[in-house]
Image (cartoon, rainbow, N blue to C red; front, side, top):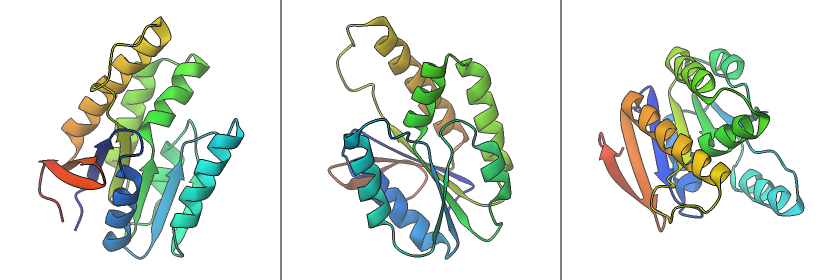
Length: 173
């Protein structure tokens, strides 16, 4: 049984999405995948296609690059939601010039109101070098703050490296 909110953190290509998908698959037969990526180029289209191919039957998918609230509130109480990923959601808002504090507060409220467990995938960016440009530094700071707030609200936080999960908060199922 998953807590109402699970946060799965990791670096790029760490296996965090695959791990999160496995958690969701074991949690409920009714699964909702909230996709936040926008496919602006061929590389991203291929990445999204790989993610879709990896998921088997039993998944409903909603593409929600910015607004997640309505989808979260419509999730079935006996299901599970996989939000992949908070990093893309944040970058979409940052690039759109939205107020990050307002959007983050709304996301946290929407997650708390969801009628079923939610697994959120997010990137841990704090282990890398300090970016050289202001926008990248602003993004890194906002991502770190978002991860901290998600982790504070989550009952389970897992860090994934090389495909291996490590419990940071709570116990791995």
